[in-house]
Length: 299
Ligand SMILES: C[S@@+](CC[C@H](N)C(=O)[O-])C[C@H]1O[C@@H](n2cnc3c(N)ncnc32)[C@H](O)[C@@H]1O
Image: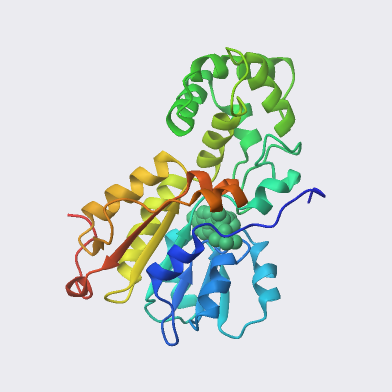
């Protein structure tokens, strides 16, 4: 970890606790454990908690909490029902998904998530499957451009894809620093508010971890797994994620959205934790009559 690495501060913590109403005998699932900021608050309110993270390094952080009310399983929340059974946990009254990457993943250069820290171009949360370097080396130019456009919402996707292909013909792009420099050099226009590589890195990270499909499947799994009247709270950090959550909550037969508009962070929270700036929290409740409905989640 870099010396300047900041601890991960849980985002919209009070709003999440209020939405999930933890308490004794009310099982909570923190499906994105990370550093356990949200899980600790749920435990402090008296709930037993099942912590899930697809990043195996989270297990040591869960063990360090040393709370007998906390169980941890490494896995993808798209397999929520299997993970619940594996941990022998009953239908939960709350499920939290705090999406994206943690500050630790961003700050550890060797995980390869961040354009600000040089390291191998990796980006795999689980450490398994093809890395970002594999994608950058193997995808053809149109496919690269399509990924940057679709998952990074990058306006200059074709120009950047061309630059990546030209650069890798000179020599392989193996590090985050090398990719960030290729993007910076190719990016049109003058100084910008954010780093020109931000959207490219977001796009590659989404594809490497299959994040949007995992979210769709995770939402469906949570809707099936929750106890009647249980709550699902999801914090999204970009419009692609938030759109999926919003549409899912509106269309799901088992869920009733609790609020029309998402909760966002206060100015004070954003000042203390800039990650909170983009956060949008949406909450839905499992309909009681849907509890034993054997049909599929969507018509
Ligand atoms: C934003 S961090 C969560 C931070 C946490 N709420 C806290 O307060 O410390 C997101 C975490 O979710 C994990 N994650 C992302 N997608 C996942 C998935 N599909 N299944 C399980 N864990 C996932 C990441 O590995 C990361 O550790």
